[in-house]
Length: 102
Image (cartoon, rainbow, N blue to C red; front, side, top):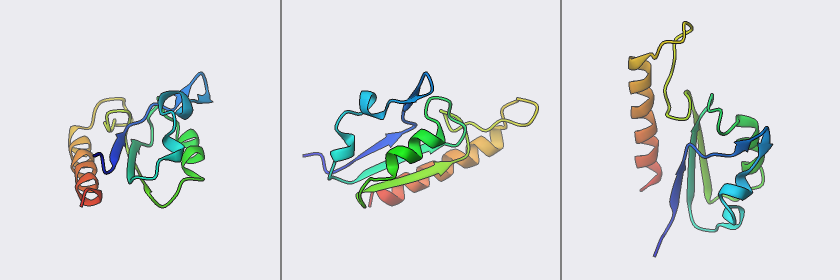
């Protein structure tokens, strides 16, 4: 039996509309533990749509917003990948996943 699950970098935005119900039907009624994590500059799930979805969720939902895009990558102001910041970000993501998994 599935005891809970993790949604990493959800796709929730399409044509400027919140599409959580399209990609994750029934998720809002989920009673098992749910962890959700996304990057703050992920174009596939705007922070506004993510926050809107999470606003009425129960305590079984744990959410984390971290720096980065859909792959948790962090870029410098000049548009180049900041490999060290991205590495540190991925370590942080992994640590949060391990923490909620216990």
